[in-house]
Length: 87
Image (cartoon, rainbow, N blue to C red; front, top):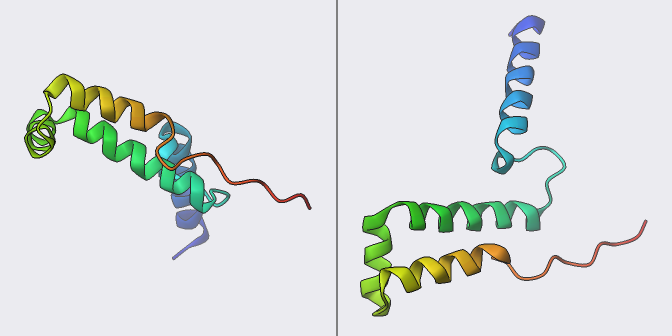
């Protein structure tokens, strides 16, 4: 791999990370990564009607109620963030 290729790959990765929040970067901690994954999943459940219908049937709820529940779960999908340690 040449130096030019490495620079090109890094610049493409930086562009992707600036464009899409959930792609992460070197400074993402475990909690932020988990929050991104959970929010991505809930957004997918809401966006795909067949998957939303599956969850609604499994929990014996209406589609609107399931959509509402998933939207509420997107606010704090992994609970409150952990306390940051002071250095």
